Image (cartoon, rainbow, N blue to C red; front, side, top):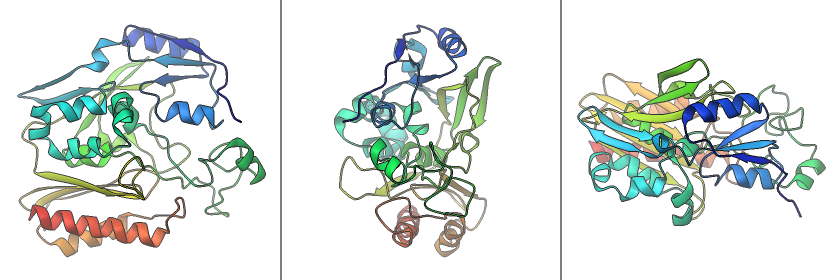
Length: 309
């Protein structure tokens, strides 16, 4: 039986205290809801000397909705998003994505920032220590080769966060804090196309908030998974449209969420599906075949684009 490794838990009350704790403990990790991190620690997929619990920082647990749009603190829970009537009315695709994550108990703990920073997944990575040791580990953690693409030099583990495609469809940006200060970037710039290092954040940095513009484009989100609850998406798609413009976000197929933005011909569903088909490259990282996940993703793009039309 695998057990959690020993670690110290820090409980900062401000963002500055959290950054200072991270600087003092290089082998530490920020902790929000912990629904993904604690499971990975238990399975020996990560080892840390300290965890920095962000739940005691009021700024990270607040959200505001006014004329400038929706600002969501990174530690706001998914359940809080789902329960807010104004957010449900003005940003329905975001609420649909949040409501589709795991099960109700997970959504009470899981956070917006945690879902965006969700670790990538693979059938050769998300296994017990003894299983991975028997299979010579893998490139993502403790090994030297990828079992998916054996001659490759990068990890193909798939990103499966639900919120990213919906937030991209709304044109969201993220606020990041680090020892060098705070800055804002487009959401898509948060991700890199490498399953072993899929976030562009520096080691000390953390997401503190998500900013979603006001007057959002009409958008919808839907995902396909093995079961009707709990499971990660095999493919999740958000589509937003504003006249001849459109944004498409796709999760579950690649090592980062796929984002497509077009400034014309959004009404041409075949054209939109062709662009999506060129952008996604599913690999054998889940229990279902890459062919199935590709077809599901493209079917969702078509379905949602036609629904918006």
